[in-house]
Every structure is written in structure tokens, then in C-alpha cells.
Length: 205
Image 1: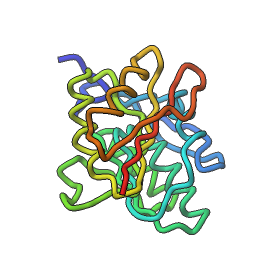
Image 2: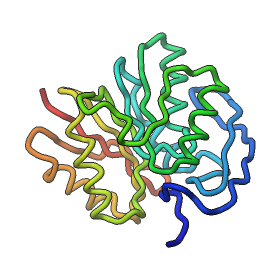
Image 3: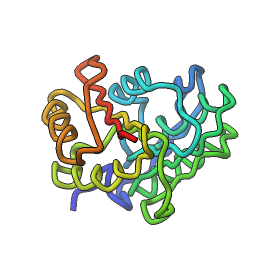
């Protein structure tokens, strides 16, 4: 099987590398590696997402497909600056990505970031927010299954923010999100930038 960033155990060389990136409104030093998504920098889609999400709400925030951690780190840094009690769940299947996220959080003194697989998330936990640059390239069926697993765990009146490239089906995903997850959800496009759409999925009370 080909080695992808969504492989559980990447076979490629880790080749850890240090990078300076802008997260949480400041420049920070992080470690990335081969075998994870966008190891050289914060990718354009993630940057577009972070430019359009609201301030992280108090409670539990899920970063679905965390990679080396840019979304999780940004949320935790912003929450620390604002004095907001946020616990971030950085979820991925890639064990190398989880290790990097945990290392980066520790290096930044962020004790509220949990780098986890789905089995590590308490079954009864509800989320105040979900932020994600989802792994579109896993295929439509796997992506839909992932979203149908996690979107119903949004708390009442909570929202998910997703970023998807227009050329990779953002508009068709929006139509699906507005119908398939159920009547308690509604979806809309809230921003377009640099070839990406930011989609918000709201859960009603």
C-alpha cells in the first residue's frame, strides 16, 4: 500500500525538521517530519481556515485530522491568550503526526492539547467546536463516514468549521452536509479565499 499522510504508521523516513510558523497571532517554532501532511509549512487551506474561524469557545474542541498540529496549536495558543478554558482534542490516525503534535504542544507549554486516536476520545464527550482541514484524499465514502461519526457529537448550538479546496469538491460537500447529517444540522459557505471554501456546520438546540 502506498504511504500517505493518512497512513497509521508511515513507512517513509521521518526526517524531522524545525520550522518557524505563525500560529495564535505570533511566530512560533515547531517540529515537523516526512510522512505527515504539509511538513514544510502551514498549508494554504489550513491558513485560510484559521483566518476565518471564531475565537475558540470554552469547552472541548476537536481538531479532526490534526497532522503535526497547526490547528490544535493555534486554538490552544489563542485560548491561552484569551484566558478561555479550552481542551483541544487533536485527532489523527497517523502515529507520527500525533507524536509531533504532542511534542509541539509540550514545547509551547500547552498542557491542554491531547493528541489522540479515535479510540482515546471518551464516548460520551460532546464538542463545543470542531475545526478541520479534513483529509479529502481518503475518498468520498471514508470522508462522509468520518463526518457522520463526529459531527453528531457537536453540542447544541455548537459549530464545525471545515476548509475544502473548491477543485476537490467543496461545493458538493456543502450540499451533502446540508442534507445528509440530519435535520438538526445546517451548513453554509462563510468564506472563499485562495481556491478554498470555509464551510460552517451548525447544530441547532
